Image (spheres, rainbow, N blue to C red):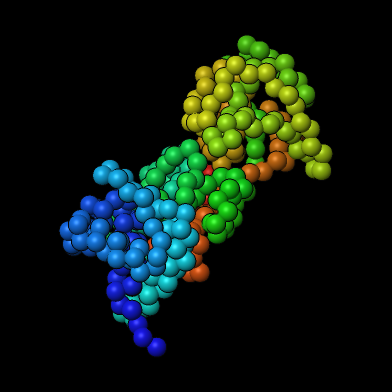
Length: 305
C-alpha cells in the first residue's frame, strides 16, 4: 500500500491553521512562511477535491465540507502524535498547549488561585483559558476540552458528566428585612426576582422547586434580566431581588450568612457540569490532566476550595 506523505503534510498544516485560527500564527508554529501555508492548503484542497477554508485577509473559517473533513482526520493526527509520545517513553506526560473553553463564573469561583499549582505539576504544559457566554464549535475554535454547566448542546461533542449541583433559591438578609421572607415557594410570585436568561436561546430559565418527586413551577415577577452569573450574584447580595443559583457557586456566601437559602426543603433540582471533548477516540494526557484537576477541586470540601 502506497503512503501519500504530501497528503499527511497538508493535513498537518490544516490542523495548525484551525488551531491557530489564522495563516500567520500557523506559519509561526510550523516554521514556514504564511504563503507556504496558503500553498499547502491549496494543494490539499486540490487533492481532496473540495474547498476546506473560506479565508479573507483577516480571518478564516472552515467550510461545511472542511469541518467534516477535519473532524474525521483530527483523531488520526492525534493518534500519530500519541504514538510518537508513547514511543518516546513519555505517553503520560501532559505537554504542549491546552486550550480550554470554560464557564467564566466556575473559573473565578472554583479554579482561580489554583491554576498555578496545576501548572507547577505539569511544567511542560501551556494553559489557555477561553471564557464566553456559551460553547462554540470546538473543532473550528481549536478547543481541546470545554467545561460547562447544563446538558450538552454541541451534538458532535463527547460529553462526560463531572458532577451535579443543587439549584438554590437565595436572597440577602437586607432584601428579606425590607420585603419579608417568603414562607412557601409559591410566595415567590409576589417578590422581586432576578432572572437569568440562556445566552443561546435568549429566554429566561423557568423557576421550579423540587421536593422528592414533586415539581412546583412558579411564575416570577422581574425587572432585571442578566446572562452573567457574577452580576446576578452581586445584585442578589445588594438586595435587588431573589435569585436561583447553583450551590457550588455560592457555598461560601451561604456559610458567611451573606445569602440565605430560602427553601432548603425544596432544593431537589440539580444542574450538571460536563467536560466536552471534540469527536476523538482518545484524549491526550494534557486533557486528562486538566479534567482530573477539575474533578479533584469540585470533590474538595467547601472550606478547602
